[in-house]
Length: 217
Image (cartoon, rainbow, N blue to C red; front, side, top):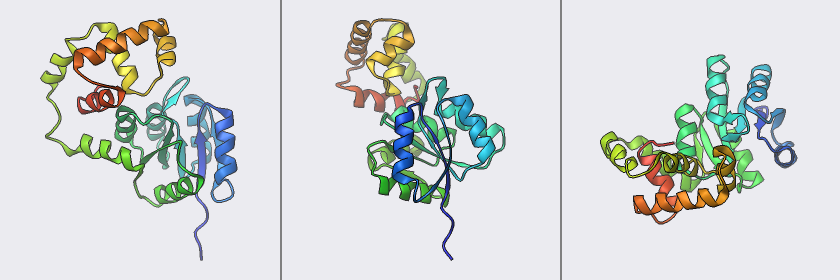
């Protein structure tokens, strides 16, 4: 006798995206609830106790990590699969350390997303191929720079550049960083260029790996 379809809650701050996911996978899993921010997500998950939560890592009122931690504190037995536009190493590692069982990007096909949900519901860990390397590197141990080395690197940056660094590592756009830090987009661009120059990095992908290796996020 086949197993019943997994019960799923979708957490994302874009109504249109949630509707699209529901339309794409709703005939193969049972979508029991939706939420667009941290508070409502925790309430919906506590109410429905789904098998899997599809969770965006950036929400208007906080982060996916906060959702995972709040649900864990409420002793709700569910599994989290991060589904995000961000492929930043820091975001991947952040939610995995919090307890997520997988991380896939929003470029995933409907069929692959259904397969990922079913696998996570069954206890597997699922990651987009490129993102799996971030997790392996983060948990390998022994090869990461020391805290002292990280401190020395950060000493090259001004406090504002460190703020921009952390937001860049989490996958925020320049516009989002400007809004969060109450500065102009042009100022963000200037700080970002200074961060890359001082750390001798070429692009944001290298910056994300650099930050993840030093557990800076």
